[in-house]
Image (tube, rainbow, N blue to C red; front, side, top):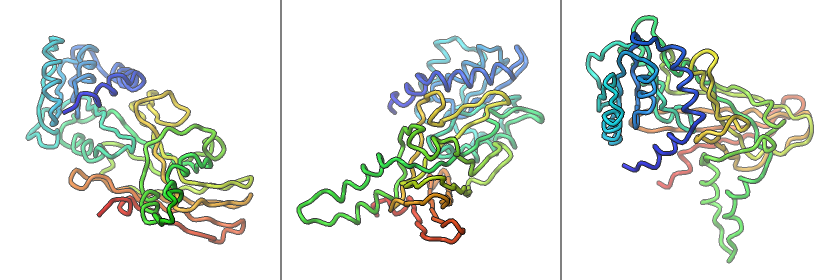
Length: 312
């Protein structure tokens, strides 16, 4: 187990403050019982204890649970109780007033937060209890900058009379963690659209699908799509990974197109995204793009799939 990943979480002051603000609004001193699911080093659970929670139950199945145990002891946090298991494995778990889980990735659901919090609502949470985060919205926007595209087609320039197009095709069927700027997006990202919304605890479908259409006012070339999410922790406290949001340890995702789409003014592109996540199989992503002319007739379609980007 390497501590470096957890250091990046601890260093993310935007993330930490947002969860602290959310907890401070729902914890009643000496009354509230909290479950911190996916506790990591124990930071969020310890925050809850400092804010006056009567009891905090921390669930952590990975080796970092040992760090959490030592950290709880070092802070003399007698209200904190560590369970070195996944919350879904806990038999007859104690019921709590608040469930909090920061198990979000660059792709929001890659750590299976949907399944985890659906189980938590059913087995861990008291009637009328609070789940943090409450809701996730997933956004998409066309990328009109060729910066990342040029990285991915370097296979074209190897020279020596060699054809590496097979490898290039695989590169363009991958998803990339990148920081994008608003000026790299269509309309500066202002026209980004929600393609999926999940109410955590209530929604149980780990397979997600959605689409969004974008019409261009001037000639534009679309090289791929940018993805980000925002999480409503509780009403009034939102955490976002958008390009123009305060910087966090998360970044945006870039979904490439195999061939750039040159759209004339008045034409549109339809993006469809699909995902499937599970503990056993990990996260599968696929995306398509359809180019429509001014009259709504389809001109071209591309279908990309993360499975095509893996070496068999």
